[in-house]
Length: 193
Image (cartoon, rainbow, N blue to C red; front, side, top):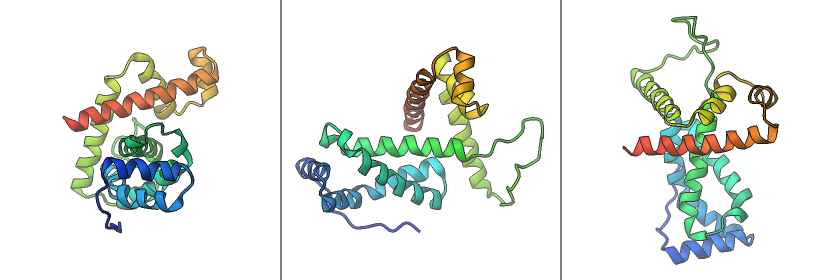
């Protein structure tokens, strides 16, 4: 179960000072940032994943990633948006990679190991997420869509994609990175409407 810590709301100057201190290696400052943003990160993760345990695990992973990459944040005042974008990106990656791929020609058959009985609400939410993902994909450029489809839906390796798209592996990695960011932005736009 998610445990909410009590944190007072920081003003912009306090936030900037805390982030700057955390960037200088102050663990207590990072702990305060964790307490301040833990709930927002968890809620964002839960909205994307729809599972409490996965959202809690992702929340921990997000803060580990944030600690590792904190030196890359150039404007400490943007910490809130920065950590939410990390959460969104990591949640999308987790959701896409953790879903078992079901065969399209095996109608009615459930993927192997799927013995859990889903509630009607969970089924509706899962279907809504799938629809939003497809709408988001359709709003992308052909290159972004084909790159994401090859990697996530067809399971191609970077080398296979390099051969198919006749581009170096480094270019394929960059395309995947950019396409994921654009998809995340499209999904955020869809969620806001």
